Length: 261
Length: 249
Image (cartoon, rainbow over all chains, first blue to last red; front, side, top):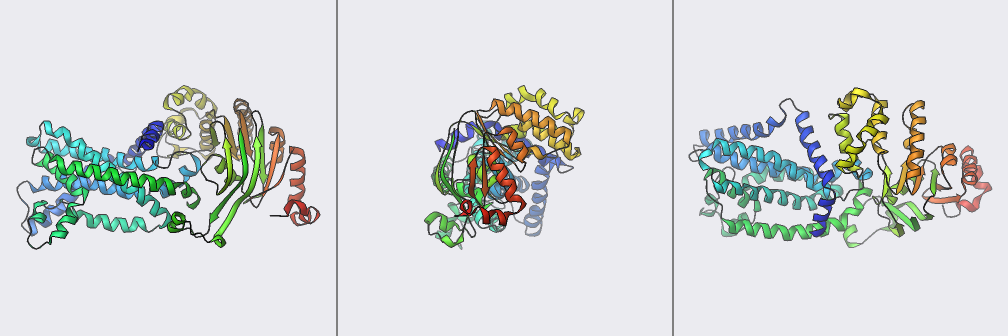
């Protein structure tokens, strides 16, 4: 972890310039540019709102805002994971020309996606201004957690992608399915209070860190209250342990990566 | 400053993560891109590397920059090494000036160092107002000039040049050659990879001739380059006459 901090600090100029490149090129490649970052979840919100609220007549009051909180957070997470998975294979040219610590390639995407995610979250804050308060400042906690969860997953997935190029394709389907395993379309209470779901499935559900991250975002921006710190602290500790293991694995294998690209 | 002791590097034809983690390697699948490479360069020296395509020249430069990790042998490097690469991280949707920052950072410069050297880069690239236009609007010559200007703005201790002088028109090549000589004078030592014997004779103290990842000859430039040129005219005949050089190739 100390070495990671050292690598990030020593390469802060590269990180800053790559962050800028990612933001600028995302904007430059489409006519509507950055607007897509709010249009995407808005369109998804309209689709799910139509299915859940109109067709199935489910979802509570202000369901559109509830959906939007979950969709923006999940989309930021899902894009980070996809980009982290392909971070090494996409950067083949750079890896063979610039002698940067390879872990740097994994840090960029979660930061860029968090930036775009924050834009969406700020729009939700303005839209649902009744929920604003001092607790809103704590939004940085779930955003930071999303960054470190994606980075940690990237430590493993980026290496798997180098060895098994189909990894990215599987991840796309897992992430699509993951949307339904997170409380984006429903409240987590629906799972915990269900009589038909077995206890072990409920335990497995609670082990998904994104369940707690999205719940925290709902608490802050939809319900307008502080999130429960206990599950967030547990997720944080759990991710740090996995990250340490991931860094060990990544450092063990990454020196061989340039030869395989 | 740079010392290679019996360095070998292999590419595995079918690598698996399991093999890598548990060292259960099938040796028959190994392809040795470099085998038993030993040489030293001291401060003030310039080493030239010559060889046919696929002889391992670029692989050797990537080992020097620690991008490729050797499978055997020891490497000792004292000082900052930089492989002079053109157009690192170039983004065609961004302006030339923005690309100077992006590429410069990737080559190891800090933002304030790039700012300090911006005039020098602009002057050398000589692309006028195009500096603030998107790189996708550039001709290939303009792109090469800008890339060369950025790459040569770095001041490493050990400089590695891999065929960078083969870019642009004749006038630009002459200008680039002068720039290289200045850069070369500033670096403590340099490694030049080239297919051009005349260039190596002009710049190097010592030349290594590589063939199939092995060192065939490592001597004074004249001696190595004359032998290499004779070899290139008729490789089979040269090998017949000088079998001692290829005994383990």
